[in-house]
Length: 380
Image (cartoon, rainbow, N blue to C red; front, side):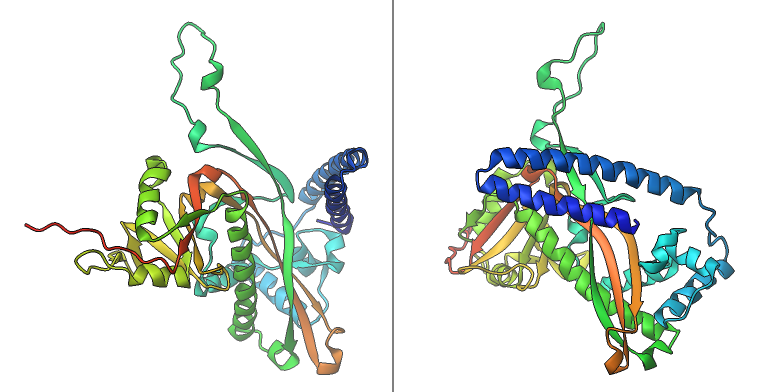
């Protein structure tokens, strides 16, 4: 995306915020005028974005078709890190052929991008808990059907029309991919290391921040628009799973909670003293609640409030979707930290998180102070 498109998207987002404020102030006529202006700007953005993508695709870009060319892209990447100038061919490898990007951000080569993604495994990510959609565009929409509106197949006989009750009820949810990044000071001594030391340092720093940011957005969307269900103990949780969730959604179900919620469940026992949480035979580091895996996140990411721990359960994969641009952008500056003899690296990723089938899961809070009566036992 070039500078013109970035500025246009920024203008659209600013005007959306203005329109929302006008609605809050009951200035509906002014809001309507602004809404029409936003629609025109959105159309302008989509047209210019399409033209930009088409022109970019028509440029003859060197494709890394062999090991030597891939190595050239990696070498060019390290030259950027060290503040060295690039040849025209190297610039094309790192900008995707966008000439204006030469003064903007460089795309991280796929090989290095993959290595950085591998380092992500060291951190607890909520990405696998929701749906995933890869996109090459900044804006668009995602279509889904609520689980409670899914009907049986229709028997087509002699060209009969489908009745209104049998027609699928689809929802169209728009997405707007945004850039998220941070600045990392790098010593000039470290920049001299063109091997794994610098890449590992850069990858761990970025992934720690990226995972924390993504998790915050994911949990916020899972809570968005949901009525919180209060659970007085593990019995309430068990009963809610049995009665409140569609059995068709229990395949692949997860139970998500924080450290406090996990500690509470892990301390509970049944009527004969057996722990409520059982080890997962296929994953010794994980516990199961009535056969469903329990995913634990830090209290910092899923905070406890007023003695109640958050607990999300159901098919969260159907409940929200992670929209991923699946690329990293890099830029360097020698000026920001000149006095400290350091270079500032800026890494940016682009994504959005949107709600989908909100009926596919439940957002609850379990009371950590509630005393639980063990389940009655039977004697032979």
